[in-house]
Length: 118
Image (cartoon, rainbow, N blue to C red; front, side, top):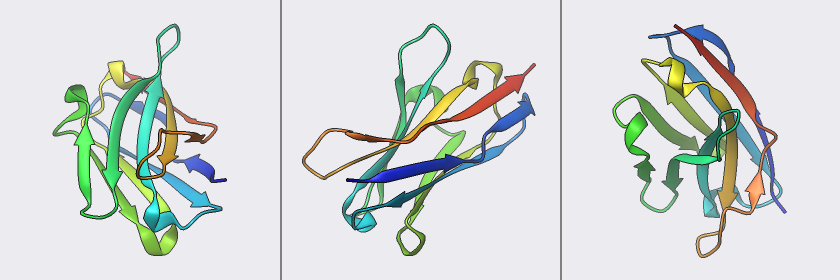
C-alpha cells in the first residue's frame, strides 16, 4: 500500500504561481511512477503530469506544457508540481497518484483544491 498526502493548494489570481507537494509513504518511493491528475466540478478527472523515476522522464498534458513542472525528491519521498502562469481554467482539485512501473495508477491522495481567479 502507498499513502499519499497533498498540500499547497489555494486561491490565487491569474498569472500567479503555486507549488503542490505530495508526500508518499508505505513503499519504496524511488520505485514508483508519480503523477498528478485534476478534476474540475462536473468534469472527468484528467491527467496533468507524470514523472518516471529511472530517468526522470516527464510527461504533461498539452494544456500545461511550458507552465507546469513536475519533479521529485526521492530523499524526501516527495513529488512536486510547480504551476506557473496559472489560468482560471486550471481551477480544479489536484490529486497526487502513484503506480508501480508495470501497473496502473492505483494509489490516490485526497486532493488539494486550486482556485484561480481572473
